[in-house]
Each structure stands twice: as C-alpha cells, then as structure tokens.
Length: 420
Image 1 (cartoon, rainbow, N blue to C red):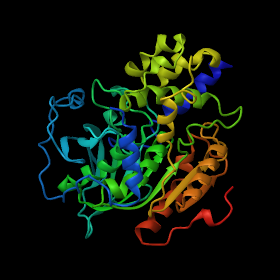
Image 2: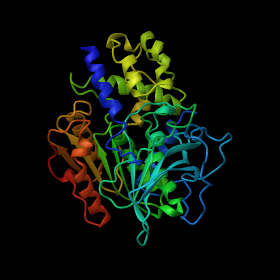
Image 3: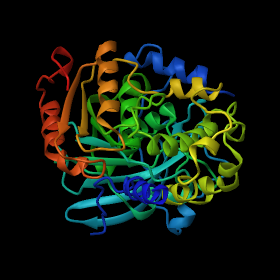
Image 4: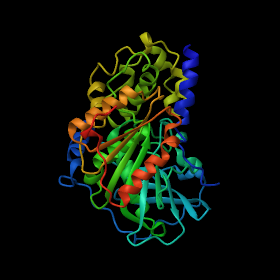
C-alpha cells in the first residue's frame, strides 16, 4: 500500500510540472513578510519602486549554454524588481517568440535575488496600451536548480488570452546552487509579479500594464500571494483578476483519512524550502533520522526523487517534532498560508470533485476563509476532475472569466450566496 501510494503521488506531483504547459518548440523573514503582506490591500505603505516603461534596452542576448544561463553572475549586478539580467531565445513558432529570462526580484527578507522563467509573446504588433499579460505559476516540480520548468523552455497556458505569457520558475528554482523556498508566499508572489515587470522590460514583447494571474497546486498558492501582494509590490501594474486552481492552502489543516499522503510530502518539502527564507528554521530539529538520511534528495533531486525517498517512511518516525506543532516552524507555516488578506481585484477558485490531493474539503475551508476576510471570490467546481485534469477541464471556464475581466465585466461573487 505504501509503495502504491508513493507511486501515485510521484505521478501526480511530478505531473504538476506540466500543468497544461506547452513546449514552445513545437534574518528571519517573518516580520518583514507579514508587514509587506499586510500592506498589500493598497499601494500605500509599499516601498517597492515602480517598474519602468518598455523603452529601455534589454541586455544583449545570452549566447552561452543553457546550463551556463542558470549560473547567476557573481556578484549579481544591482537592479530593480523585474529588471532583466539575461535573455536567451528559445523558439520562434506559430507567430510567437519565446525567450528564457533571468530577472531581479526580492525574497521574503527583501534581498535582491535572481529569478528565472520564460516569456512568450506574439510577433504581431501590440494593440494600443500593449498586450495583456497572463502570469503563470506552475505546480510542484522540486526545490533544486534542475527542476526549473524554464530549462525545457516551458510556457504556461494562455487560457485563450491573446497576449504575453510570463511563466516564472520562482525564486531559488533555477539558479545553480540555490534552494527554492517552497511555499514561501512572499517569495513566490513577488516572483510572479516581477515576471510581468520583466515582460515589460522586453520592448519587442509589447506588454502593457494590465495582467491576470493563474496557478495550479503550488502555483495556486503562489497566485494567491501574487493576488494579495500585487497592488503594493507593483502599483504601476493593473491586476484584473486571479485564478487559483486546486491551490495549496489551509497549510495547518488535515481533512480526514483521505488527506494524509500529500500533507506529509508537501509539508516536508515546505519545511526544507521555508528554511531558505527563514534561517530560524533548522529542518533537522524536526525530522526523524530516516528522513534526515535521505534529505539530500531535496537539493540533488526533483519532486519525484524526493517522494520516492520519503513517502514510504512511516508516519510515526517521520518527525521527531512535528512542524505543525513546534515553533518556530508552526508560526512560519501560518504566515505563509494564503487567503488572509482581501484586495480589490476579483478572485476565481477552481477545484475538481475527484481531486484526492487538494481535497474538496480543503478548498471549502479556503473559500470560507476568503469570504470571511471580504475577498470577492467566484468558485467553480469541475465535476469529475482530479488534480491532474482540472487545469485542462476548467480551461474554457477560466478563459471566459479572464475575458470578462479584460473587457471590464463585473466579476461574480460566490460569497454572497451559498458555496458548495
């Protein structure tokens, strides 16, 4: 049973790396993070400088190898969030150009960091005001450099939006020698937002200021944080709405006997990942000897290797001190739980009735939390969709919702009626 569960989990979480993605080829951060997040409901209190227009020249095309692209310059030259460090063309096909990018962002401790990803844009002339931007946040791939989707030139779904698609790898996932702060909401959210700024640094992309965000699984968590932080972190941009698909949320909760395997694996990856942003967390203070013996897979493997190494470890020896019950990890996990801040931009939460990983009860908990804080939210539940199929099966619904946001239609709000 344990081996079968591990194999199934490997297939699902490793599959999150695609998320419907197309191949274009054919000091403790807690206080600072909380303060930034609390100021996210408006631009007041933001200390982030506005991004530039698209008139400045991007860096010269990077001509080295793909592996060399992910070696961050030492020292990293100073730059504002979204400012490009490197650009490397990936493909020109079907009237679109895809480039691999490295750009500046800020981590949860407000340190200047290099983030990688891809940007795909039409070769056609942009409309007045520029193309809208879809910022895509991918699902779980791992915590090490080799796990970055942009290494394969992956581009997120556009959901029928004609415009630019910016697909971040997230901070720490891509650059060689770094560890991705998995489920660190501030770092994830800023990575998503600054990918839009990076797109606007490419004059030929023709990206405007209007944008929407979408993300699946881990990416749903990232998209929710981008939604919360968008107005404060990038007041020069206009966030029209966010779609969070089967999002990782309610991180401190477990929902019955069918909600066990994923909380264990997602939880341990979050423990090791959050330590990258929160040095007060020492993972070895929490995990048992069997986990510690194989934790090298966090830094030298991807999600499938981590799952294969750890999923079969019995629950009663997995932790010596459970992070949900032991400080400081307990408080850090709470700080990185989305859905605790309301902003003006509307939200769409999408889930599947057959999802055994982000189970319906977890989504219902999130929706109640969002409504309680006053966040305008529409909920769509796709009958029969599971964690792997929900993005594709909900694609048309998400596309129609984005289209309405781009044309100025009022967003529906499920909080005014019964949910579920």
